Amino acid sequence: MKKMTIIIRQGKQELLKQLLHDSGVKGMTISNVVGCGNQKGCTEFYRGTQLRTTLIHKVKVDVVVSDDVVEEIIDKICKAISTNTVGDGKIFISPIENAVRIRTGEKGEKAL
Ligand SMILES: Nc1ncnc2c1ncn2[C@@H]1O[C@H](COP(=O)(O)OP(=O)(O)OP(=O)(O)O)[C@@H](O)[C@H]1O
Ligand SMILES: [Mg+2]
Image 1 (tube, rainbow, N blue to C red):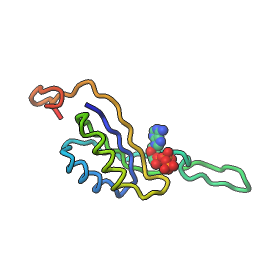
Image 2 (cartoon, protein in one colour; image 1 turned 180 degrees about the horizontal axis):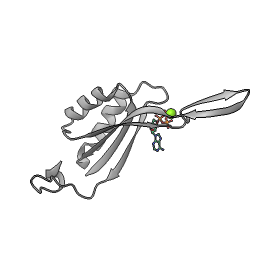
Image 3 (spheres, rainbow, N blue to C red; image 1 turned 60 degrees about the vertical axis):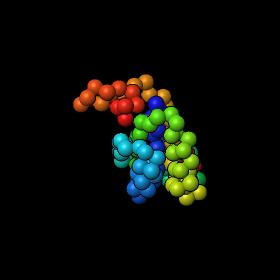
């Protein structure tokens, strides 16, 4: 299993939810976050001096999925979510050791 942390622009979450659903993903956790990337948010300059760095509001979607759908989801996200401009977001992928459905005690992929 892998956890995919997908950070996207506000307003793109419905598109992402649909695309995940199409790949058989049912469970997800969505948070409103602030952050910055390479452009350090929106950096303002006054007479050549950096005044402040602003954090941009983004949507973070965490999904734990089976290994075999990771590449498919990455492809779909890059095709559907990209506007080809800075700030489109990022995907971070990390291994998940186990999952448990508390109601039944099911473990592993059965718990997803
Ligand atoms: N290295 C990182 N670690 C954690 N979060 C990050 C990282 N890079 C980006 N993020 C998060 O992703 C959001 C979107 O990042 P963004 O798409 O601007 O990345 P970027 O590297 O600047 O790429 P681009 O040049 O296309 O804008 C950020 O606002 C931040 O919340
Ligand atoms: Mg950026």
